[in-house]
Image 1 (cartoon, rainbow, N blue to C red):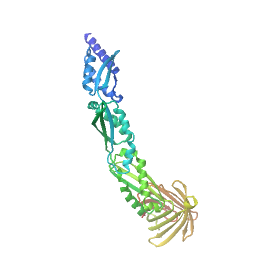
Image 2: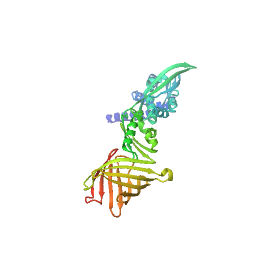
Image 3: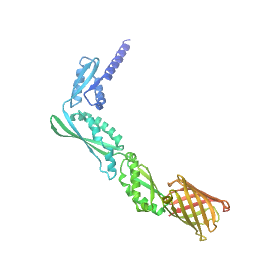
Image 4: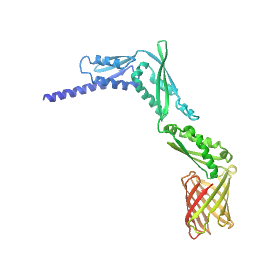
Length: 410
């Protein structure tokens, strides 16, 4: 029985202490510091034995813990109130010190930090500099929250300095500096795709694009991801400044995938001209020999307003040295789908034709030709990289209708 009464007394004392602790309030301190202060006070309060001198003891310890303030504990009903009065007035100045960045990433960083100093200055209002002896970690946590919202991927360092005093105020500055956090962008892997330009020009653009995007190397992946649109615009403007793109009146579309090894895919297609050189070999279709071809085309959109292209494809059988010419026209149906007609010499046969090809490498594509007398000729292909494609080829003109076709683009 005695043991039970003792346990009950301890239990109710615990509840009573927690109730008072939960009701403990703070006045006069910055709002963002209240939770930090309460945690310290609760740790002390729970260690002070119950008694008449409990509030005096809490007041004494609080004055020792929270330098920079005159601290008093008042009793309002059953709830203690801890009142903070600053011992000095500090006039704060916040200095944002950006890292050394190359253009245009320095402009991106500058835009992200507009108004950041004012936002931090609000935290420092009525905070004496002596309080940083115990409030520095809480202040850094608040600044880190602001930084994470504005500059994901960057860590901050804070440095407080006392500068001078006048009119009863101490003048102090808080310097905020930044350093990148892992993971960082370590490399960029670009790829260029074009259905109108030869691969030799695409390779030149690819080689020039890598140094053009070098300013983002070494930057946090999270921050670069936030500025994905700016990175794509940077790549687009860089390519549009190249003579290859400007002279051929090419459109540039960019897709950027940030990561430690970032990928950037660029589709560069001329509005006016098409020029391609290719070699092809066949496997499984008897009678089909290696071929070489040159495709040239002229788009009439600038004159007619329609995406209508006239083209000529000259194909030579490398084994027999026989030349075939295909003169045709094609128009854009929707998106990446084209349809048209072509005349083939020397047979003088007319073929209906359709193409579907996404403007990216490492994607499947399909083309189809049909002649009422000669039947179907189509392929399901995959663009492996800028130079190579592999097709499952079907041609009703041959005994073995199905085979493989490998294409090398130059």
